[in-house]
Length: 517
Image 1 (spheres, rainbow, N blue to C red):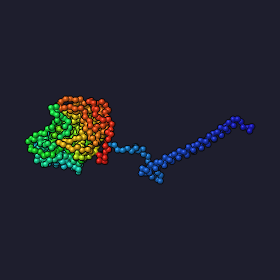
Image 2 (tube, rainbow, N blue to C red):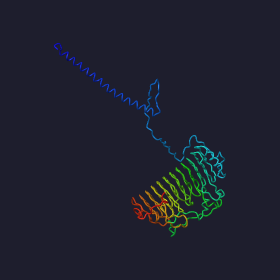
Image 3 (cartoon, rainbow, N blue to C red):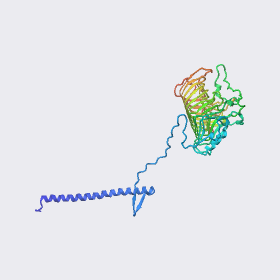
Image 4 (cartoon, one colour):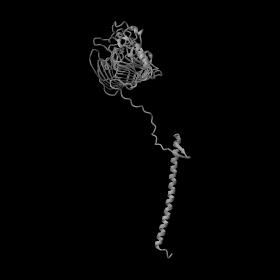
């Protein structure tokens, strides 16, 4: 030990520490490497599983596999329908650039207002019917005399455009109508049809109106309108028979009718002087009417502007309707109807009904009517049902209605009768969830008339921001009237409506199976 110096001891100690540290790092590296290889093994295994699940993205060369890497796939999402471009101002919808045009002049139409062009229209339609997204062109500056005609599917191609820029007139000779027809121009069982343009459909209704008879229906609300110089309701005026082509059939046609069609559009055109209803949709799904005009005298009998029946998903907007009956009539089987920005007058207002005629069942729901201007009309917003009916009307909103010199701005009439006499019956169409808000302006007879059924009272009737001022003209004036009407006033009204009963009727009839829609 004598030769072992402190210097040698220090060197020996350093060597021992270095050897120990080297062994520690090697051992730690082995442990870390083991864990890393395990994680890589897991990743490789997962990649193989993904490759198998995706159909095997491996290429085998020389017995070794080499995985092809791919960027991560984005998450799957449902397909989205691209937003559609809003229609052009003025009502024109641009036809596809590749649209094939069938001009009625090329099929023999004369367009002189005298020659019967019915066969030329039939031929043009038959050709267009075979071509998807084709166009039937009725050119401007021509007048086409067309008799009763049906433009029918169901074997026509979709998305046909009927471009109406000229004028179509109805024949005034009684022989063209036989014993009577229910429609003049009819489109049936079509998909995606559009009628557009700046043209006119003229029904030459005067010859029909002058042959009106005492059997024609009358608006029952006329019983509420009593002239100042009389103590009884005014009689419905019966026009004198004229000589514009002889006596016409008793059955009067609708000018333009759609039946059993999907995704129908009417825009830009004018229908005037229809013998009866101007525009009718029956059993249609997906209806769009905008920038549309009706022009007929206020005393033309039973000339509804737009008539909806058994149709759903309907939008009517931005249109002007002047006629001799309801500007818009909503009949049984209608649901999801939205009507707004309508100018109505003259006419009989916007009505739901009459419903339940001849003891039938009627179902109407989810109706919105708003942003309406009415002037010089008999009624404003109205619901009318016949005694003896069944079914229901529910979920109705009348909102933002401006009335000017309207005789009866707000009406529910469950005793409607357009005949000389009707039998009293117990059954009735049930009315509930009817909401009136922001209805303002002037009236000339009665601000509100609620005549509900004794056996089936109206329920959940709400009134908000009602302000109607009297305007004395030529009629006796009356206070608001309610009968068997239950609901709530959310704000004070002008005039005060004190006849509405708060809450629910104590003996409200339970709807039977035949009443449920």
